[in-house]
Image (tube, rainbow, N blue to C red; front, side, top):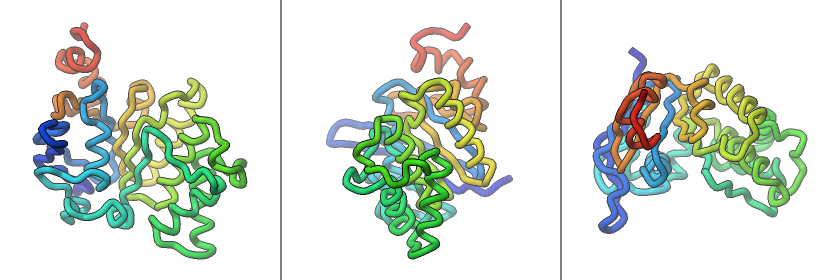
Length: 242
């Protein structure tokens, strides 16, 4: 059996009395792609934030390749191979598209000079933004900013790629291109944890599907079986599976 790259053990995230995540357990083997679905407010983005170090765990632990990173900063987790895209794009608007990717290569992968530039350019090419490399990032439309989120994450050279709603707002054709990109990343050995409401995109890539609702994992298994389950129909789709 493939050794786990990510181990989330009894993880909880509380904001005062608000319990966003409670007793979450998730193991992702190296090289696997796992999709996360669930209703709005289920805690999906908070889970990625706790894994990446943006949010602190209130209880439980996060391990990366066997190393406990629960109290490690987001910057250090990035250096250890955790790349993250955000649901709401956050580019450095005054920098060019290339410079945004270069920040990822230099700060995340700790590369310098030619190797940093080459990695940034490869990330832009993968994300479909190479032709806009010299354009100010702040001038990109929403879809361009979403692609830049992916490029910046890729420029860090991640072993574990956390994707948050990157297909949202894309046309069907653009979503298909994105699916091909994520599939190629998986085939190259990148481990992927992907939150997405565009379920059609997810099932073309992921090996497993996890349903998160009310701060807890409700179902975890084969994507088609998970989507067909009565529990997922109830908490995510708002009805009963046929």
